[in-house]
Structure formats: C-alpha cells, structure tokens
Amino acid sequence: MKVGQCDLATLRHSGCAWVTGASSGIGAAVSRRLVRDGWEVAGSARNNKKLEALRSDLGKTFHPYPMDVREIKTVRENFAVIEAAHGPVSLAILNAGVYEVRGARMFDPEAAKIMFETNVLGTINTLGVVLNSMMEQERGQLAVMSSLAGYRGLPNSAGYCASRAATLALAESLREDCRAKGVKVQAITPGFVKTPMTAKNTFPMPFLIEPEVAAAKIMAGLNGNRFEITFPFRLFILMKLLRILPYFAYFPLVRRIVRPGSG
Ligand SMILES: NC(=O)c1ccc[n+]([C@@H]2O[C@H](COP(=O)([O-])OP(=O)(O)OC[C@H]3O[C@@H](n4cnc5c(N)ncnc54)[C@H](OP(=O)(O)O)[C@@H]3O)[C@@H](O)[C@H]2O)c1
Image 1 (spheres, rainbow, N blue to C red):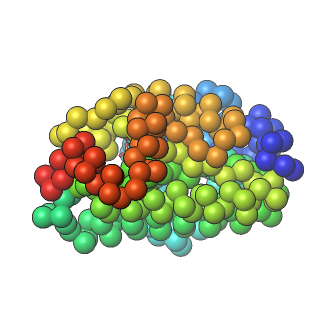
Image 2 (image 1 turned 90 degrees about the vertical axis):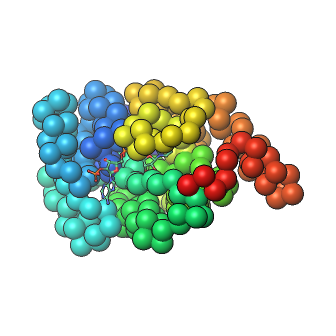
Image 3 (image 1 turned 180 degrees about the vertical axis):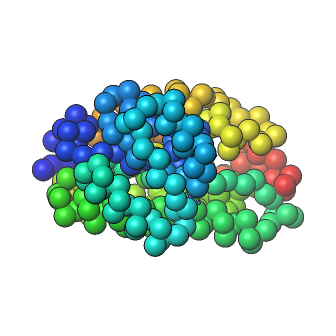
C-alpha cells in the first residue's frame, strides 16, 4: 500500500484508533471526532476517572485504557489488550504530553526531565508498540504530537521546546522509513490551544483556538497526505519565518516578541 492510498475510511474498517492523552484538551476533542466518525477508540491517560467520564459522554465505542506512557511495561501490556479486544490499531494519535514554562532563573532539571520522560520517551514507548504492529500488517497511520514551539528554542521554554523539537525530528525520520511499508506518519504542530495545559499561561497567547477547532484541523490533516498538520495558519507562518532566520537575526527579534527570563 502506498501512502497516497491510505485513507481513513479503509483504516476504520480494518481496526481501531488509539489516542494517548485522551482524557482532556486536544486528545479528548479528537476522540470525540473519531467516535462521531464511527471509529472504535481506545483512549489512554493516567486519570481513569476522566476517561470514564468521557466514556459516559461519548458512549460504548470509546474504551478507556488508563496508563502512564512513561511505563513501557504497562504500555506493552495495555496495547496487547487493546488489539485483542478491538483488532489492530490502524490509527494512532500519540498526543500525551506535559508542559511547563520556566526561565533560566527557575530552571528545574526535575521538571525538564518529566517533560522529556512524557513527551519524548512516552512517545517512543507508544510508538514502539504501535509501529511494530503496523509494520507487520503493512498498513496504518500514526500522528506524533509536536508543537510550533518545537521549531526553535524559545525563551522560558527550554525543556518543552527541546522535547517538541525531538518529537518533530522523530516523526520526520520515520515518515520515509515507514512509507514503503504502507504506514503513514505525520506530525502535529499546533500553536496555542485553549486547554488545561495552557490555562496556566500568564502571557498573551496569539491566535488562541478552542480544542474543537484544533480537532477539526487534525481530522482534516489526517485525511490528507501532508506530513505536517499545523494550525493556526498565521502563527505557523510567523514561526516558519522565525525558524529560517539566522541566529544573528533570530535572537534580537525573539527578545522583542517573548520577554526572556521572566520565569
Ligand atoms: N494546548 C496547546 O496549546 C498545545 C500546543 C502545541 C502542542 N500541544 C501538545 O498537545 C498535547 C495535548 O495537550 P493539551 O493542550 O490537550 O493538554 P492537556 O489538556 O493537559 O492534555 C494532556 C493529556 O496528556 C495526558 N498525559 C500527561 N502525562 C501523561 C502520562 N505520563 N501518561 C499518559 N498520559 C499523560 C493527560 O492526562 P493525565 O493527566 O490523566 O495523564 C491529558 O490527557 C500535548 O502533548 C501538548 O504538548 C498543546
């Protein structure tokens, strides 16, 4: 199967969807869309109460599979149960993540470590099991969560930007590796989305969008063949320009846009 032949309707009939970080924000909104589109959805997060609440809301085609993505053994065990119960995972949205804003003055290695363990190693853990299964079946589609914050090292976000740069590179590398095996890999690079994660931000968030809008953009992107599913467009353009600037132009400009050292 070629990438261009991979459509979601075919995948929906050949297996289930797995969404990590499904208990709130973007993951919950995407799960809602998938259920509405007729998917059997396995939803994971640590908080089972929230997953159960979502099940009450979404109905019997949403299946809670609580897990901590940092724990490889739990991930493996749960993944085996998901596939045994609902068939092969043909669509995976590897979205679980955490975020903290901290400037150099408050830099906390423990907080940065948790971001790496969740955003990078957690993605690797979930990617590992799902990729094995998809490569064996020679079909599937997986989307790895990154962020526009992964484009460049932004002030006050050293740990987060680095973790999201890592997941973007991870997906980029896998895209071509998987293509020949009929597995489509995409990266999701949102700007600011109004979720519990960004609720703690005290700075202005340009072009902030609702999670339902983000989910609609993600669904449209999953239905297309572009590698990067990115939104909102205006912030994407701004960050794209920042990304290609040489350092001598980047640092003075970013200093004006983001107040460094405020954390
Ligand atoms: N909101 C934005 O502006 C924005 C922008 C760019 C990228 N993103 C990315 O989008 C993803 C979703 O973020 P969101 O804004 O929707 O935030 P959110 O509402 O806080 O959702 C984060 C989700 O990840 C889960 N999670 C966190 N740590 C986990 C762990 N160790 N194991 C399993 N699940 C875990 C959380 O559930 P539990 O706490 O129950 O585990 C929750 O379901 C994140 O990866 C974030 O980096 C967000």
